Image 1 (spheres, rainbow, N blue to C red):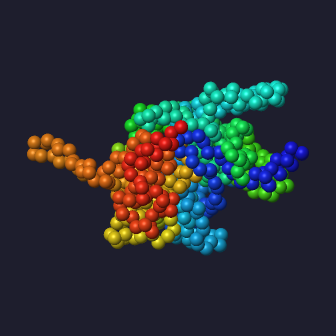
Image 2 (image 1 turned 90 degrees about the horizontal axis):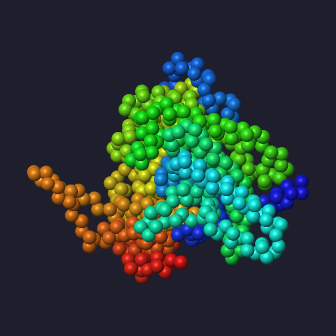
Image 3 (image 1 turned 45 degrees about the horizontal axis):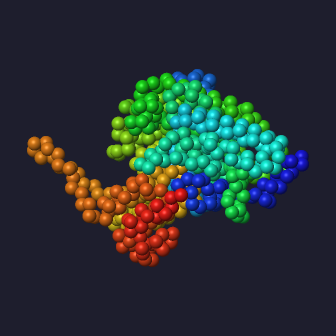
Length: 593
């Protein structure tokens, strides 16, 4: 009881906020700070419309549904709730914590809601209501988990040795692990001079242990896994849950913020994520080589379904073993209970897939995923061969919603994805198809401000509203860099990717090669004296490795684009006057340690 009272006292009065030590990465600049977020969202489509096509069709498989692991039944009343609205899609080096926090945009309720949201026909919140993290490979997750367990055992042994040793031994104990591989806070993602990640496991470890924020990110986060072996996928699912449930903000008790400060390491226990997702839609060459994503579905549908079943079993087993009773509910400390009110929500299991050749094949496969244990499904309304090009097939998406989501009484929420560029597109897709939510990838990367609940000119129909305004581009870049400095990504490659997406509309020169009558191809001519061409190529230089350098790049853009002084973002305004390509490169040299 004494220990419990001390713990509650520390949590309530001494360490009430979260502070994460800034990892020693190439981007480590600022302290991570928390801002209160709300992700409540109401329905974008009236209930009557969502069920307008509801029927009891295909009831011939009802006997299978009665015996499956699908959690659309009363025994799953503690499953993590699934919000409506707009979701941030899982993107490799694109949906890291900095982008997730930016996409949420401090969501707030802007409309009235008396408890019945079925009559609300428009999105009434800013930002993403649910965020997916970058895809993680199952085998790398297992390696991270094994490293973390070994590191924990070593730290426990050191603590025992310190308790039994002399003061002299204590003074030198911290150097005993300097030569060992370290993951978690204080660890780095090593890069070579060409800008390549030396060890992908280090990046996965950073995403799992450092690039997370329990109070305002984890309860709204879906962790996506990829793989093809059911046993490995089940083990990786357990490993993710274990890392989120047990890994602490500060892995090493000596890893405190240098120089002190008013913030201290958080003592809050870890939270489970809102969900775990199975990648069945990746169309890239790496997925073909690794036999995962959309290629797994085409090559071995049964294996894909078995993977989902293994993940379902892993979630259920872990939850029942570790969260069977909520001991915190018996706490007399209201403040303590409030912060853990969502800890015992069972994470949702989902799968993200693409359309198969025929819509009926897609529906049949979705039913198998539902029977294997999926709580909701996200469908990219393009086929694998289309990748991210061409218009999405919303008619197929609507058929999937009608066949699966609107099926009474065992419907499953359907999230649709594909080519949604702004908030207006999102509302139109939800109204047209009746889907539970929509998922956005490139639209967020290009211009995250288009999804805010504002009268932004980019959401209008007239041609003038689609004009590229340099000051808006600079503002988008500055906003992302501010978020990246507050929540440092695993490496500068993430920042480069985001800035390339933000600046693409104004810097990339889209010139096509020409072919004559003899089928001789003449390469497109590029004017390398054009500052746009120079800055576009400069963005991928491997010596751009710090937030300060990337802010200088944004300042140089403002300088070349003649952004009015009053419209230059505050965080880069003071840099514009003296910035040049040379000064940006030299800033990297000066920052090297």
